Image 1 (spheres, helix red, strand yellow):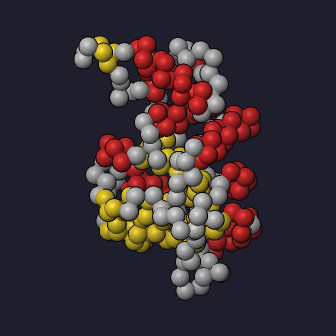
Image 2 (spheres, rainbow, N blue to C red):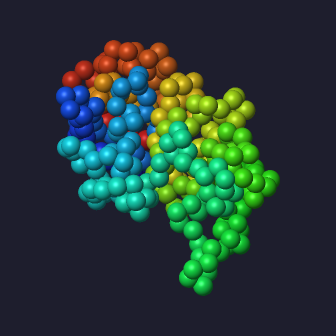
Image 3 (cartoon, rainbow, N blue to C red):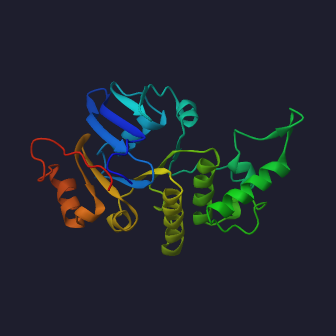
Length: 260
């Protein structure tokens, strides 16, 4: 990626309060295509609130969002999806009693003769999608409730990619997975990066963050602490930023980091 590449998403001065509690205090964030950007911080740092303002789940009290260079007001999740912003929360929002194609196209089903579900077309597109993302699910007609946690997470992520998402937000995607399944999910995340998507990743596991991310942004109690390229920092420095809430490299202002 070139240093001159413009961000696909720019969030500037994002503020959100719940009564007397200020969840976000003027946060800035840039997200670039073709990278995995990790968002880290302790509980109540503001991570979930920030991604919800981008996904359309909540409206910020102040600030602006630019998508592909144009100012946007993201009214609701449907509007975010129309822009190309998809979110996978920890609950995955899968229908356990349905199979893979039905879950991939849930709410956006393909039809024929206007009124009838085109199950064959959805199955063909689902198989092609899984192959493209290197997801191994031998029987796509199996009910999702019978699948492993890693397979379920992969289906939720694949659903985003199916509809040409440019920005994919993942909230703790491996929190409930074992070591082997965690590795498969992160392989899928890296594959999405290679295919040009922007991935915004929330994780408490710094080992996973450093192994799979390109950039790290730290929040503390609703305030942006700083951003780093992974190759230009260490876990010790990031931990200090999380705990202290200060960026020693930029005491007066958070420095702007562009992807290299």
